[in-house]
Length: 267
Image (cartoon, rainbow, N blue to C red; front, side, top):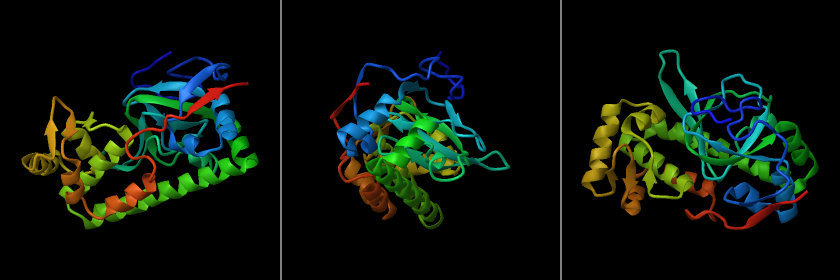
């Protein structure tokens, strides 16, 4: 069963009503965490997983939810968002093909501490927490990969907190656009100015002014609710130093192109 705005969990799967792993599957390892693992270890995780198609706006976890499943985004992006008392929101972190969503089920209390939703539609591998915890406990390479990924997420959250306080709206917008492009792997980003304003917690008018400045530089353009980065070098030069740190944490080997190594789901 597939839902457009529904919650993604064990009962309301958006791919299948069953959490039993598929016995036969060949999938490109776009996820950089899986691609970093030895073939046998990656195969075991994929064999425990279920492929899902995530729809933009789907809620993966709500604040305080027990985490039942962990996600390896392939070409989707999932964001953790803080909702304030006045109804405003700010994006805490974004996770795409470089990471894992739901790591607090392995490191921490096992509950979601922020509202977590799909920012960019696409595929992911969903692994039940008990199976992923078994891989985490028993396999050294998986254990190290999860800790490395957790460290990268922590760095992202810290660096973006600094950026939000110290740098201009124009710089923050450039950082956000570059981070999204790294994860989407394409120059066209499916976001309106209103959606971006909600993510970086500013007024839409502010985003409009900053975006107009980038457009005047011929760095970006608009196409019906989509932003196209036409001159990445210009966007990088306008961004603050925070992006260099965030880009490093994203992974030196991503380079905007997904890994093409294949993982065969064999049982």
